Image (cartoon, rainbow, N blue to C red; front, side, top):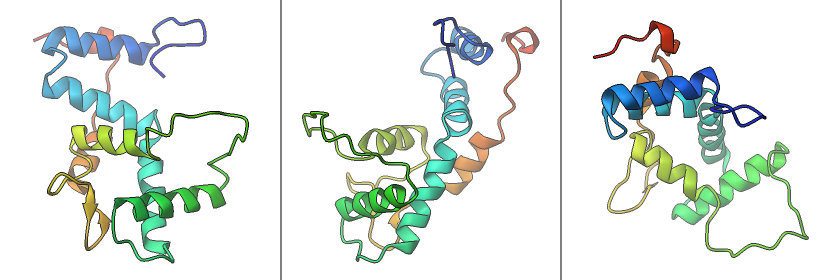
Length: 148
């Protein structure tokens, strides 16, 4: 995505660095560009849609964020996206989709209410306007980007 198999920056990686150099790593432009990459090249847009389907198709009541995680896990496992490795040891510290929820929250894709991403009425509350904004960002090659 941002670097190739030989660990050299790809064009998208160079573009992200350029946006950071021009606008700053904490700028909205940088966050927007990174969010666009995550949704598109990182395939998070597809994952978000799968999580939405998991919530809609859930056969268990969704009473808290752990129920949402379980519904998503079961849905993704049925699709063959989750593979279990019985020989792998884990610390058990990081919960399923916790990193994704955190990134989506920082990008403004997933709404957080009262210190939780769980939404009583929907399971999760996605900011569709923000998702559309990020998926429609035009990512220009470094040579075509104007410096500010």
